[in-house]
Image (cartoon, rainbow, N blue to C red; front, side, top):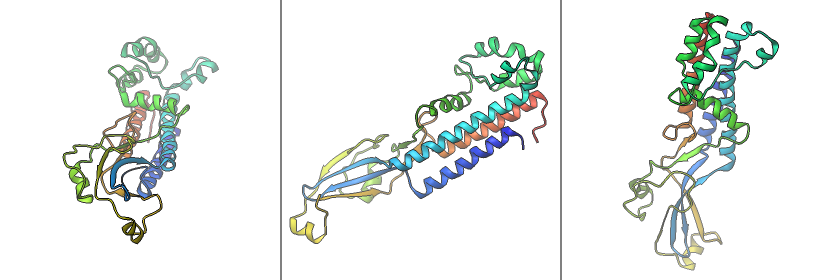
Length: 259
């Protein structure tokens, strides 16, 4: 199989692994904390650092393989047209700031070296940040970012409302529209009747008098650097599909049989 598609297959394998991790354990949850001695209750978001960090490493692997896949495809289309070994070593799929930069610095030499069809194919992908294909740019930018820090996913708690929580916690205050997004501690605090010492002893409350319970409410895992409104798995699948289309577009433009 072509090397570019092999890289995509590796990204798909990582995405499957990530999906399995999320099925086993969510890196983010929404919790109810009760102080049985004082009667103070609170809800808060909580992150499982171990799961979140494991997910971040895999997300970085997905993005790295997608960036490499596009680079492999671009290499396959242009390598034989390089004029020197130094030029050949510097071949990579171009990402520019503007369409003007792409047209001035990248496209002019392609028709004579490869073909006009290939130049048109590259231009159609809009690999520039200002008004271009931001998802292609995100693949590049986040791959670079992953070299310096983990791409830790984020918990999206904005779909939670007071009605959802009240079904699980009847004494929860009314009127809450959403619980915010992020890892905010103690979003809502209220009080109930505290338990007596005898009641706490009979109920086997721990010495701290604190009980923590995860609530069954929707908490989506998102990659906020790409799209904070979509689940991370969906976002990464869209990037994989985009990469496949980009490879196919480049190969068609260069007259390469990609089957």
